[in-house]
Image (tube, each protein chain N blue to C red):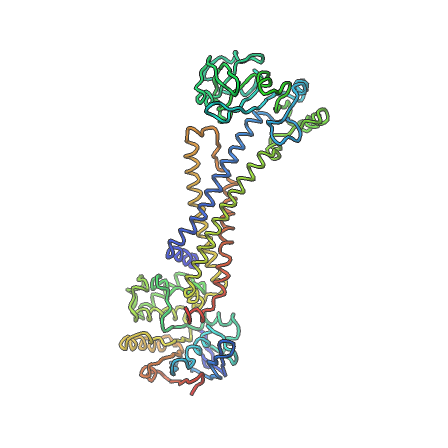
Length: 370
Length: 223
């Protein structure tokens, strides 16, 4: 306890150095928590768009991006008769731009799609959205930025479409999207007879392996994955997740360098003091423990401050009207544990050289020449 | 406090050189200090007083010869550390206190090294602060203390772990005459009241002649 008290005392005495070291860790923690949370939140949003309350997602084998996936509608219709399947929904994804928005996502769906039935209809009649019709439904945000209302025509890419309704969903990407009848969407994107994915709800979840095997055998060009499997294997998600950890890791590295720099300066500036400790009975290992202890305390301050700043920042971000529904800012406990562990590892690694240097200080020489 | 029948400080044929043997500082020094005595080591600057005291305190190792403190050899780092923690208190000329810690915090450092319970350490400190007349200064930072108070703080710190041997390297060297006598008197009192054995280097012959025995050094040897 006395040892901890001395470490705390040293941090208080060298307040500015402590602050700089802790700021480095704080920076790392904030970067890691925010970047990973925002990117993984975005991934979760994408996951929800793709899976849409289903258990299985089916798409073309070996495609790098689902926008390039072609699932024959014939295959979807054939599977609809399978006893293992309760519901199967095709969805065709496309991206276009409008005058003020470089990215507008289009969803080609059938009129009975759960995407529409699960949404809140703000305006318009669901009955006007038909499989063979030419009317589109807009997400609330899309209606806002396209300044559209029911009955008006909106420019989507090179064509204009009449609006049948406006819906509100919990997902920002869907809320900023244009929902087209599947046939109209296929025609618009020159994807006749295909969808990007098909989402499948099972009659019995226990029989998922059986259905997957059936799909693999019957449609060798298609792959059916459970949502969790899909999230793990989809290359776009993997890239996003890897990027988030990489950016966070680099931020942590910078934080670690800051701690190493702080602790090295601290030791260089305290050579005489360390010699005094040695002359008063401190062993080399006790000196090293003191340096490590100070570094770990700096990390602790950084973790607490960084987590608090991250929570406030993410909360503010979530409250921004422009971002509502686009990002999921819930901090996952496993991420917090990982960040805490990384902070302490960084703190310990940053104290390695200073501690080794401090251990080598010869008290007699230091007191004679310093 | 460890007490044996032998002299608490026994130095036999100690040699020490620096710069790879080019500078011979101690040339076969023998010293024995009886229990409860205050022995002064005098001699001109560079004669090897401080080096001898550093070796006796275990701060430095001897090239050859042996040092026994309470019959325990200081021939390994582990033994020297053990001696510094429990048997030896060291007082420097320039006190070597940590300036931005308080007097109390400085004095508690040896107790942290030994892992002493804080309550016990504080009891000891208050007792020593009372004896050295520094109770009212215990919460003051070292930089706010006078030279005499700093040296008395160093004495307090040296006695924190109740050593049987105190080694003082010119403890009055940086003090004026009046303060020097006050500090010397305090050291003498502590030798008597705590029963410690003390070896002290000094330039001040008047002080030296008030100790129990004076050792003269010249060119790394006892005269």
